[in-house]
Length: 425
Ligand code: GDP
Image (cartoon, rainbow, N blue to C red; front, side, top):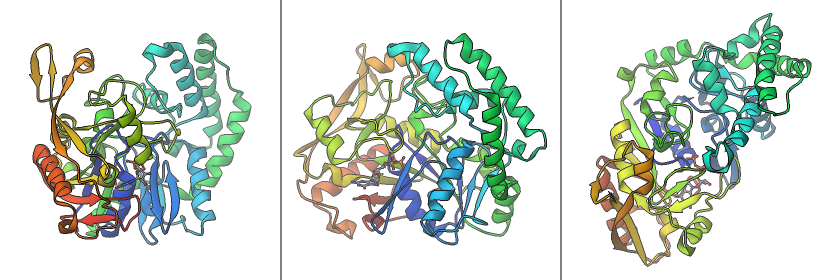
């Protein structure tokens, strides 16, 4: 059974939650490797909707083991809340869910700093963060000021919290933002630490043992390639490596132990928050896509910006991640469109761009070069075999894969598990 990395190939919200849910059938261990509770996977099982921010959706499959890897920044309050929600629905988490002792803690003061920073940036410079403290937490990690999950087990944990809250308060005060009460923070985090103790583990050893035992590991990414701190539209990005490399650094599994990379990509494009988006549709057609695709953030409820499929973005993701198989999602959302556009390259300053320019200013002025294809104008969600899809739908899908390279592994034609056509994965 292969070890698989699953990545988002666009700006997140590609439908990774559902694809992970489907691929979990083949996996023994599901490992989340980066991001924090800013991510939100939506999975629909037996008609019931589950939104998970930190815990891998593999938890919805009895018997599968789930790991929150060292690369994730963990809000322990949110984690406890998710554990209780899952247990409240009759599922067992004890002995099946492990959080890395090396993962960093996303604390209340990180949230406060996140919000204060966005307010300070003002309307034209704000990143559009989810306000979950993820950026400040990764900032502390890199600055070597972070607290880790393992610190919750230390006898002096409350001293560490008091000290960090004090330091954060000085910054918040200087920014004119409200400060936090160290005693209240200590009390809260000590209570949470006690409750989380049974879930804390050396997940590096756990993952390696599973690999040595021949178990199949699924490494799941949050966000997407265009939000990657290095390869995304910096600075309108997330604070971690959402791409395939991050799967290894965020779990401790060697790149040599990876067998395949699956890229999840939507048949059109969406983006939440600020930053350039060449194929954005600012008209009624964009609004129509938003409604049909239910494009509202799982974490924030914010409307997502919608646009045509961008093959330049897709090729960028193919390169950076080394995508072997594509999981193409939300084909059904295009069912009613008479004409569908695909962006094949950009034009800027009289020059053609076949790759994403690193310069944000150039990227923000890129105009899409479109190809048009006829829509199939009939429903697809009920279809159970690829060959039964309308010819025009297949032609569209095959054109996308042709532009991206790699193979079509899976095609998703609806939100539910059953509305999935599995080809090569
Ligand atoms: P993620 O962050 O990549 O997991 O994406 P989200 O879960 O935030 O958003 C994906 C949304 O699309 C969820 O509401 C899914 O239920 C839904 N979804 C996934 N695949 C499909 C599909 O093929 N068709 C439709 N209509 N909805 C889908």
